[in-house]
Image (cartoon, rainbow, N blue to C red; front, side, top):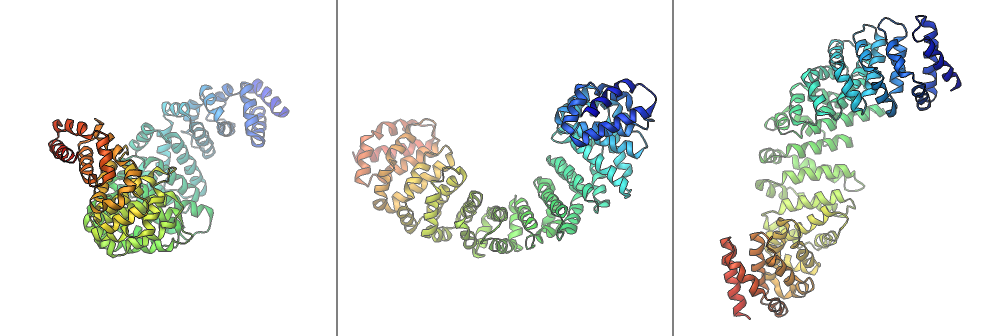
Length: 565
């Protein structure tokens, strides 16, 4: 560091000197110090007031210029140096150097600007003001065809600079898109796919840009997908770390593009699109990353009924089931989660449910009941719930499966995982509502599920409250004697009293609560509880309710309560 201090003092004296040898030796000393301990050397350089001297040294014709730009690039690796670099007025002269024809000057200048822009609002604003991004975009356009190693290095630096410039900034990203960088970057990816660093840089840049739906469509129309498929084909069997990283980035980006409705539909092409077919071929792949991307892509294609119906009719379910079967024992959790997501989405259209049940989806999904992973538990519950919707036979079959009901009751208490808890309650209710079967009701009572349905009736989500009340009404109608003790133990009657007294309760909640009150009157202990809570007062007020269904049911309930008092 003593050497550095001496060199910095000397630089203060000679920076205005035209004898470049003196300046060069000082710069060499700075670069050496930065290489040894960047943070410490940067602090020293800042403390000794060297930054304001650097703009004068960034002269286009000077042989020192590349070294000065290199020093700035090294300094700006430190977050605490980026704002001081801007304040020292380094951006305008650096932006001017982008007009140089010297390869080394361009390389070091690109590095310096890219590092100053990294995660720095001040840096980006200053580069924007100096018009730096526009010049870099033009360079990339004119250099894109050249595959010489030195040129590819420069392209990689320039792409990195634009990425740092626009990352997480919608207006700067929009500015780059208006400059026409998307077709240029797609072309770059196609021409330079053998260059790992440049390919990775392009892929990350696309990942940043593809957050906006309108951009997703532009990227698809510019031919990015074909380039991504090429990257996947080149790296799928690669052993190198960079191959694995590129495969992941390219396949993840493919899935991201499918999150846009228009871009997804364009690539689906009625199920006949070549891209759609290629993605399908990823599912049976031996590569976990491709299996994952393939399953996620199917889940994204399955975002409207037409696509779902087409995919089920063309045998995709079988591919997903085979994939899941490969991941039952010691399976990859992310692949399990993705494949279950795809099946859940495919099960939404009514016409698909019976076809998927016949294909054995429920049996394969049940194999994952042993999973300890909440995301997998959540998806498997959602898939089963979708499958049995309106399917009485399947609801009956699953609802009399003691092991399943036991697991649902256990997960209804998973307080650390609200999603799993909610889905378990909803599936328990759905088994009763869609089967309307006394056997299912018995299985749920024996498994200890009644108290959870009573708790579910107090949920903050109206849809869940309603599902619980309908299921409880069926339990009371089909086997009140068996459920009586559980209803008493779970304070069902006082829960219903609260729901009817609460002015915020929705009309359907009030209606179903009154239906349930009438249904439990056949039980002596429950009848006594109803009488002790003065239900008649609450119900008689509801006769004046603005909703006709509620007011009519209130009259009927009042008559029933009066007759049995």
